[in-house]
Figure 1 (spheres, rainbow, N blue to C red):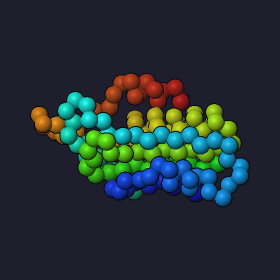
Figure 2: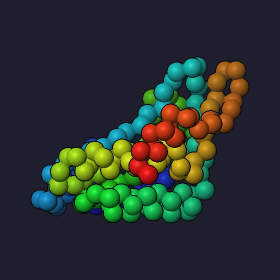
Figure 3: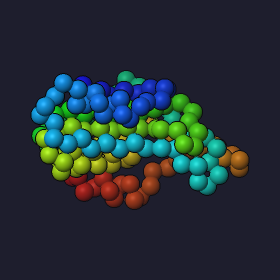
Length: 147
């Protein structure tokens, strides 16, 4: 069964995918996305902060919207918080449906939301200092297609 969680601990994508399909015979496709902290631009670490109850409510609302747009059977969204170093998993989105197209589109919709609208704040640490990450125009452009 799917889940919506914000957590400090790492997650296992295989375990999360298995939970989406366990005991089901109606699932024809699972699309998943795992975001990983990149170490480019001399990034040493990234700290993610969230107002957890608000963030969970917002993510839940967008999962509900995805379920209205596509005939989804189950969805999981896991977003980590805390200090993460390059190579660490940061986010998991898994979508189960009867058909692959619905799974792919819903997973992409949810990731576009998480990149642009989810209430998380990111502090990048580099040898030159720390700074808060500003939204990127390209992420906003990607999210516009779902309106």
